[in-house]
Length: 184
Image (cartoon, rainbow, N blue to C red):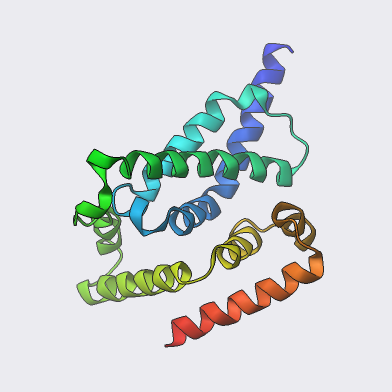
């Protein structure tokens, strides 16, 4: 591969990262769960994921966005699992600490409006994350894959080892359950 091809591949990966960054941030917040979120900001996990993807951009062969998303979110999942393992080690168990891991996020939100608006945004964020955490693992996975990652039903079915009809039904039930919890 000549240097121009390397630069082109890097540009492709940069463009794809930029395009998928908002979805990655949302996915990391929801996938990390409260234990990891209490100790790690999603920005740190996202930044670490992006750095690893960019470092290994030479390994990426562009076969479409679905392949890139799979690579990106698999990398992020590894980061989340590593963080979870780190923070649940006996001497560092995050469940023993009561610090607010969202302080930096709230500082950013505070720049967006009034204190009451920030409080309202925080309440909405907490409600969504709490409702999401109450879903079963397969329900969370189907929502994340289809709504956050934008996978097609066929891709979700392949990822979860289910039929497309099964995915459609699970997604419908999961979204109804999530909606009811948000309304409560």
